View 1 (tube, one colour):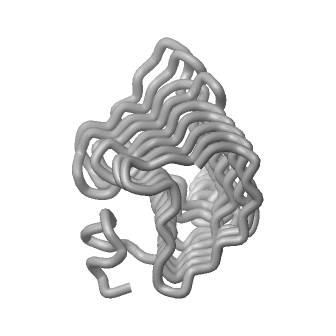
View 2: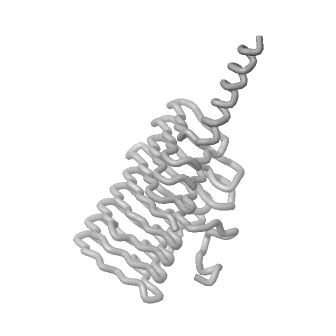
View 3: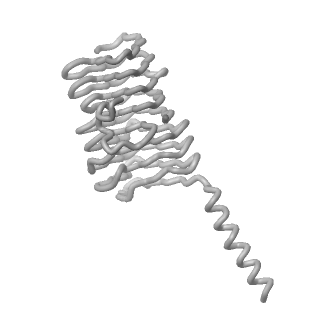
Length: 102
Length: 133
């Protein structure tokens, strides 16, 4: 397991993958920049207890994609995907305060 | 003569010991310079700083930055980019307390994943589903 904090104010891009891919890990994210990938953020068996977006998270498929993961945070920016903003699967939990766009 | 020999030997041993105990490494890529060798952060407290106008541009290898150290710090005001198809720009494996700070002037790009946080290395990090998880 990894325990990682990402503070992104610039550009973060995964052209043929996820911009951020957390697998079996703990992730804290503060984003005021632009995050883009196939999925902007993918969580697999991971926990994000501090997830704050004031910027942009976008995906060619999903903005945020979860499997068996817990996500707690807020959005006052934009979260978008060509298919969906949030795609939540496999008993994942999403506790999100949204005042932006998704 | 013998005393000089033993003093020299002691100095060599001290250097080797310091190396083994692993003093944290600080990598700095200056503005206007491009580094093409992947960076490895494998000792606690290791850091990598890319200044605005500097670049870490890796065409081949597992990742541009491989971080297995605890409490590492990556600060990017320039460019970290990765063009291979193995892992991604920044790969974090079994690390506790690492921080990646991508500044407003910073860009992190990859042909695969931008940042991957994992507990182990997969041959195909593109989809954890491929591993039945």
